Length: 488
Image (tube, rainbow, N blue to C red; front, side, top):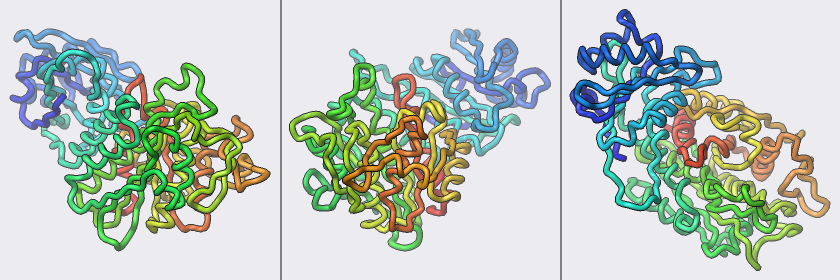
């Protein structure tokens, strides 16, 4: 589906299906948005919209009513709730996503969405939510139908809110990240993902890309990435991209890219392995964020590290009881081959700090199932060794609709969970009931010991893959967070 962004009513009125999104108090003859409806829809269609909006009940997440118009087209009114909790996005991003997905507007050859915003600042989360509701990947048979969706944003007084280039780009990259997550794992193994990333990055001026593949990982002391992926048909690798001048703040974005996770020799049970194509959702998110930031020529140095491996099974698979030497120099006794993502991230973050000299490291990963238990489907879990980084991520989540919630950061409480009698640590905890997500994050952080890097970790296991579809979660979040932290 192709998105177009319009600021004139004429472009909406020809749509086969028009979806209007506004809060409940926007409806009624004396509501502030009455003028906006008339300006954008015309008198007759505005009257029908007012009627439908009065009939729909928003509940907690929004409701809708729909009707055919006099011209035989369809008008659907999505009524957003007037209020929301303080832990939600003020833009009501999830309500917008839900209403767009349920409206059927994406099934029209020519559809349109008009969003009445409370605030101009809500344009990014609103447009990104529309993109999230309409995923792009399909493997269904038959020739796909070409579809176009016209999107317009307005304030209650009827004045158009332009969808700027940055918002369009972030939405594009988020949809692209969701597409990667939805792609079957045999089609998107480490080599194919790296090739796709290079295609994304190639048009960007000033971006330098290199790749460490197979045994080259060992020569660069990346023993964790190598071990996880060494027995797969497609060799493990780390793709490194950099842009910006070699001065000022240096930010690194590190992503877990396990293109498929069987669990390794601790193989997952049936029902647990399905959907593990999504275990590269963190790498997809940081790729999208880096591409969006790099396109706007950042004034500070920006690095991308995609840690790519397939956690496969074979004679060369890494084994329980193996001891790995990581990039940090620390040794890890393997007690769970299904706790592989942290091995990739630990190497990637250490390399970013020690070899690239990054002062600020943000990593993203579908790291733990416990994240969904702790913070749910809509809030990623955030852990950081720096309160300013944590607060920037939380603020970015509210602003973009990629919501986050902090979990404890306490090395003194969690490192003992990884005690090993023969190595510096094991890779999985003794007590699976003791803050698993925080413990997994601490494993990664431990490998930054001896550096001065500020570090933020985003565990997006549940938000990145909902309803059996990728969401592109994390792209908008990371772009906004990097900007808040000074890397413009």
